Amino acid sequence: MEVTLPAPDELPTVLLELAVPHEDIDELVARRPGPQLWPLLERYTELLVQGMGDIDLPPPPPPLPDELGRYFPVYILLAALPHVRGYHRSRGIPPEVSWLTLADLGRNMARHRRRHGTGGLDLLPWLVWHFRGALYQLGRLQFQRARLNEVLGRAVAQAGLPCGPGDPALNIHIPGRFGPLSPGACDASLRAAAPFFARHFPQERYAVATCHSWLLDGQLAGYLPAQSNILAFQRRFRTVAVPQDHDDSEILRHVFVRVPDELDDLPRRTTLERAVVDHLRTGGHWYGVSGWLPL
Image (tube, rainbow, N blue to C red; front, side, top):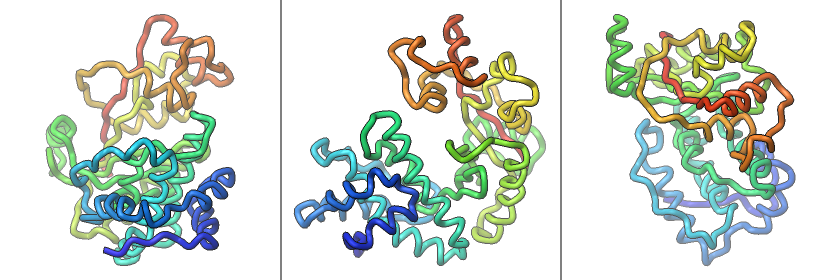
């Protein structure tokens, strides 16, 4: 398999197409791997793109050596870029959907800088889905080609739909920094999902979409106004009770980008920020909740 990277003079344009922050571009050009790192780049790129289009991940690669630094994961994705773009073309994916999907690289690099104060990327496992052709952003929401797990599959079957555990389903993800999670924007994304996947993946039949997120935690209804976008989003789903431990760090990372040493270190500018902090101060916890909806 041929592994290439954009030439130094071409790299800035490619990075901008992927929404990489301007602050990172000069450093990414300067750190572009030389011959001594090429065998390692080839190894990780091959692991990423093998089975391109599969909805199941290959075995996880070994951890990257610490001395490679915070930018090496970006070069792996850049080396995978021509392969996933070729896969998108083979499936007839519109270029605007392809680039919008892959631009999640830039969003997550901006998140790294907000969280750590430096450039880099620490979410390579998440972006593997995008760069293997398993996830697509259609407007406000992202849809990942996946399978129903045991719990959600049983719930869907009990509701009378012709599918169950192991059958195809679309996992919904909500990208940050992409405007309000308004009902109209969500309606447009959901309307687009079924015809998009029927057109480009006709061998797969998607009858349901699922979501697992802190956004579905019913406790938010005790803090947010009834007309809030988050509660409107919750009401779309039939939730499923799944025994689990709380994960306060998840909501903290999404709302505040970081997990603070003290709650007093967090801002209280919005209703959601105040809700998250006030609930934790009273000894409460936040949970990821699973839900599903018919397409």
